[in-house]
Length: 376
Figure 1 (spheres, rainbow, N blue to C red):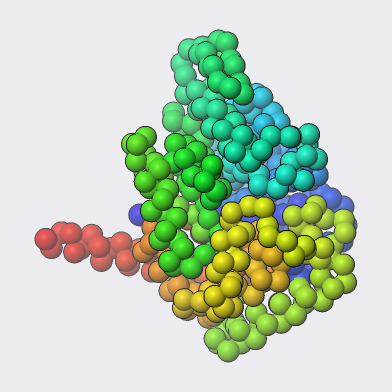
Figure 2: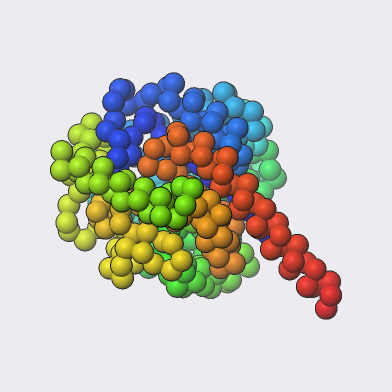
């Protein structure tokens, strides 16, 4: 099983420890981040979506234009573009990028943010709509003739996509969501199911649930884990670095965070109420067990930010972190989405010190497995 690395191209330079400066779309930063991660050996980069942010498909198109092989994982929220049109938009992007497009479906767990785009459906209704949306996307991408679709949320008469993706089976669908309403949709549609950086036990549990949900459809999805690796020459220095990162984040939070960033990117005005999405609640459940879990999973930032997004880390030397990632690989994780607290600088370090080590460990593990099978 090959391993995939996904980076992150933010719309501007910002994190829990860096106050945003500059415009809502920093073109120079976008280009520098994309080029650095292509050079560093990342397979894809995530382009984020928010109800107030610059449009993710258009940013992805620009990234494709300034890179040569870097794949795209475009975060996309169903319900605000007709699925037939969205399918053609993604197929067009895939053609222009020569097969580099993928879509990351984020149905959305925050009612307040969804209301900014005029969406009044409940979470369960949104996931039901997402399932219909993905039904239609796949038919637009693959159907050789016009099709009809009759659903609760969408009705299509003689829908047809004249522009098709490069792959005959369409564009890869990454999918996030861990609620009871999300799991069946993930089982039916996800090519890659994405979860945040959880404990080994949590990963085992969610992987088993998704596989069970996918089995009735004859599907075998892959799995992605999102992490914020913290690397240093020694383990002691790495943990000191994590402490320093947490202190900077605390100071930024106490200073009011970044008032110009979208709510899910602000790192100051974080409420204390339970987060509305299941993924964040799962991270907080891990954080409640302690700040250092398993071999080197660090939950300090998740606890500080109320698990507002991808906020757990693996901490240690590059070799130690690579070995911990191999543990997740053994649990079924074949994709790692990694980004740092200093986004551009950290991505360069990952490309130089972490990605090659993980690839080498996975290749050795796979070779050993094949040798064992051959010996039988």
